Image (tube, helix red, strand yellow):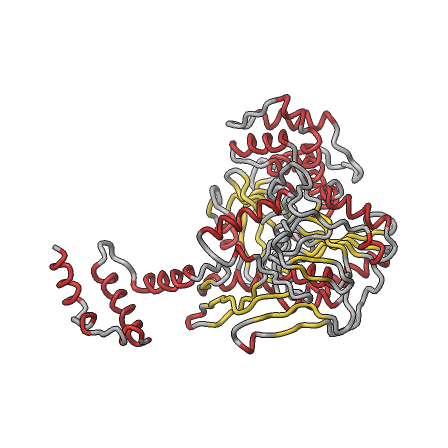
Length: 552
């Protein structure tokens, strides 16, 4: 049988494989011919019929997968629009944030000044149909595909609303939607809060405007929130850093084997907010341009970094245009902070055993375990403080959000029924505000409200909640109820303010800024984390469960 197989292979390939010498096998022509022959045989003789174009796509994906780099990917023409949206922040749509709740796509938030707001869509509305087709069972991706479209085109949707016996019909004309990436408010009479969700094309302008706005309200110190910020445009990471640094100060360096990819970026302008004490909040989901900003401010002793170690995504991707509207996003360089630290977490660069090490490193960050600095290269800030390599940005002060064992058990019980506490609180918040339209902005969650919540979730099929456990996690439940009632009644910013003002990171940042009048005062209060130490023997529940969600 082996001899027969060899003969078939030799004949099937025209005998050319048997004629090649070792030297020929090293040539590019040989490898290309070998690939074409394998493609032909699979296309013609595989047990199941395969489309030739699918095989080429599989080959491309396989080649990129073998690099062991999750950021180098092929982008098909139909995926290119989503890539542009994530970078540009604009699209033709309705202006709603959505999430699947149960069987229905639900409006989790309405973007201000959008077509959806002008037509009267409300948080809590359920999309029951689009263009006459039932939306039952749709996932988020399918809903987005149906609702987005060219600017100026109409879409007809049917919406279910609490208190309405029949679906409400809307015809909404799609428009360009600008996704706001900045939120801000005053913490107290002298501390301002500004959160940046993404480094999109207008990040510098929007952030600077927000900081000036809180300064006009009296802010003398700033909390800059980068938690959950996945990054975005490199030039905006540099531009935002420029707001806080002296002219000419180094921000980030890219290093590549390709000469034209080697750059050193410095601050082109003078600092716009000199002398302003700044605490930067980061967590394990702060990545890419977020790490450029945090690393630059830390290396120049310009801000105190507080939170958990960041993700460690310090690589540069270049998007190359390909035929047919396709693109290749390829890692072409690595990012280094002004002190010379690589932002890339080394364990994330490889595969196999390195992958499990990467997961372990990220879990340590989530639990608030300080980086073991014993074997790490030591770098120094401009003021002489020690900072460490190894990837990601290690905060000056590590203070993770934590949950108790009871709170984790409660989340698991809710999760077994296919829900999250956030989803259940959202449903309750929509119903509560519908029943209490005159709710006061200064409302508090009462024991009676919590009891009503318990009675309602007790009626959900497959959801089994122990009453004693429920009572032990009352504080956490109240926090989510308060946030989602505020979301339904007053919007996403009020929800965020209600939720975040109770987080340990936020509270510690407020405490530190309350005692500091200058950036130097602030840094003097930073206590370096001890090697391998654990801040608390408690785990951080993932971001999807610890923060109320305004949608997808």
